[in-house]
Structures are given as C-alpha cells and as structure tokens.
Length: 247
Image: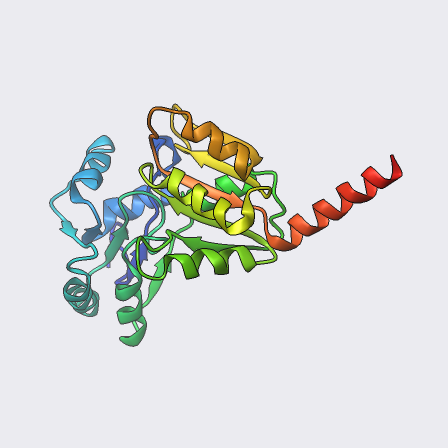
C-alpha cells in the first residue's frame, strides 16, 4: 500500500447539499484516492469532481433501482482489495438516500466501514429552528400514498421535536394535512434551500406558515420541516394559560 492509496474499505463520503464550499478536506482526499466512487447521480458527482480536478473515470452509478445488484459487486471489489467511496447526490449517504443495503452487505461480509462527517440538511435546520433539540425524531420523507395518514398521525404523537423532509410540489399539501390532523397551532420552522443563495427560514405556527406558503405562486427548492413536539406544545400552552390567568 502506497502513501496515496486508501485501505480497502467502504467509505461513506458526504458531499455538499448546495454550497460547494461545505465539502471537507477529508472528503476530497478520500475521493481523490478511492479506487471506485459509487454515486447516486453520476452527473452531479461528475460536476463536483471536475470542480476539484478529480478524475471521473472511477465513477459507478449506485441508486434505488440497481442497489441490490451493485451492493454485491461493490462488496466484492472491497474484498478484492479496492477502496470504495459511496456518495449521495447531496448530503450524507443513507440519510433519506440509497446506501443502507451496501452498508448491510458490508457488515455481513465483515468489511471495514469508514463514515466521514459532513454536510446534511437535518442538523442545520434543527440548530437554526429555535425548537428544543435536546431530543428529536427524524422521520425523513413521508410516504406518498400507502401509509401516509398513519405516518403523519404517528409523527404528531411524538413528545419531542419532529423533523421531516418534503419536496417543493408537496410541501403545501403536507402542511394542510398536518393542520387537518390538529397541528395548526404548533410551532414549525420551515427551512428551504439550505446553504444556497436563497436560503430561507419561516418560523411561525403551522397555520400561519401554511398561509404564507400557499399565497406564493409556486414553491422552489427542498424543504426541511421542524415541527414542535406534542410535549413541548403542551408545555407552551400551559405557560401561556398561566400567564393569561395572572394578567
């Protein structure tokens, strides 16, 4: 093994969610030295590699539709002495993105897995939300059809802060559903286009946030929803009621 080579292993490499300056030096070094780069979107990853003069010849596609097939091949590559870097289209692998199947396969094959810290939309949204984040539940994207109502009802039963992702063309519908399930007065922080030029935070109760978004002609970007938990909402309401009685 030379000084420029990586130990045979599966490397989970986060890439920026928007602002290209958010990539780490360690991530760049890993991408430069890996024998294979498995990517959810080879076009997006290819553009990122070109920005840092990293050859894209080692790129292989790895996404929801070929995950089972590619997982086995990538594990075999590591067993044969190769280093494999796994990247998502944006953010950290396996966080609401493909990747867990290859991690499962690597664990089963007793292959070394090296996760790198780095960009994700989840933590910046939480830290800037103003919500209680000593405890929280991350639910990812709600199901589009089957099990959606059950998913949302369960989300509203959590005592702690809840975090979800949603796309631009479903965000208003999601807020309408949460309102109809009784969450209209809960505090919510909607984080949009995180780390990008048009980054935006809307911090209001859900009813007001819905009204603001619904008044726009269209929605743009990816959304992170940070919703006040049932327990925090009850505490806030009790505090407001006590203050009203004192006054």
